[in-house]
Length: 362
Image 1 (cartoon, rainbow, N blue to C red):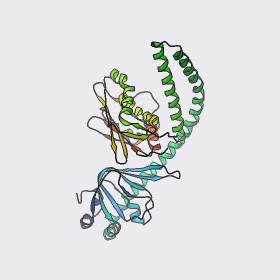
Image 2 (tube, one colour):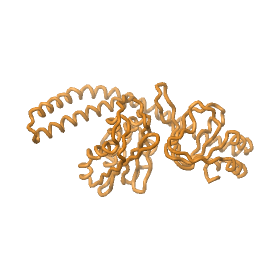
Image 3 (cartoon, rainbow, N blue to C red):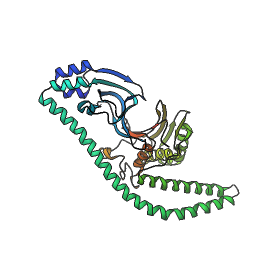
Image 4 (cartoon, one colour):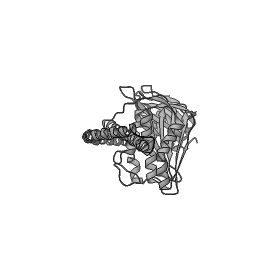
């Protein structure tokens, strides 16, 4: 492991050996905080395995994910090189193995390196900054598009609310006069789906405004996911897709309705992309810092051209129709909880992962 990290490849052999000899290896449990925003930067970190989140709190105390660090990447370098305090918080999301290099050791290796090595290092850091700038520009463009969408949604929502209220009132009248037969079933179905449409409109409005008002409660994780699966059971059978749920009988916290919407979007997307004879799996796990929900399909993966923009608004994956807002709304709802959404390829398809902290913002 000592010299297997790509960071060492930036240096000549003598410097690589010095850095590898000076590196300390730490195995970190999930939930560990490596450093806090504003701390003095004394170390640079190399990630060999696991998953690290870099986040920053806004003026309202809400944490926002700035970057997700994976194996083969390094972080904490800017404070090491310029001596400024940390500009983000680093937390272990999945149990990780990191290499730790002291600031003076890194600076000494750079001082002893050739001009070509220094240029390679500067080029690498510049690419990281360029990536961050590209992300910022994409976010600004995204905000402008959402602002335009918000104005349109305001008009649409106003026009939809009146007929939707009339449908709900008619269905409630039908329920009051029902004798327990089919009329009661159909009336209840209309009422429930009218409420669902109203909630969807509110979620779209919140998404367009860039904010979500959470009502945080405690709920049981397995019944929650079972009910999500039950919503799509009939549709899955029609598509010839198996829908499985595996989750612990534990209590968690969050806005149950909004998290339901997020997981439903993931399941719906997976079902639409899945061919007959495959499976969609929903599973969850309680963690030290919160809980994880995964939705995995066997739909053959995500096209290369969509991967960098998968969570952007108006991007669709493996389906016809729709506005391409599903994954963007998922990310918005989960981030409102102080959590994150990520994805990875599997042998047969794609696995989406939702991480939610133990105490979401209310």
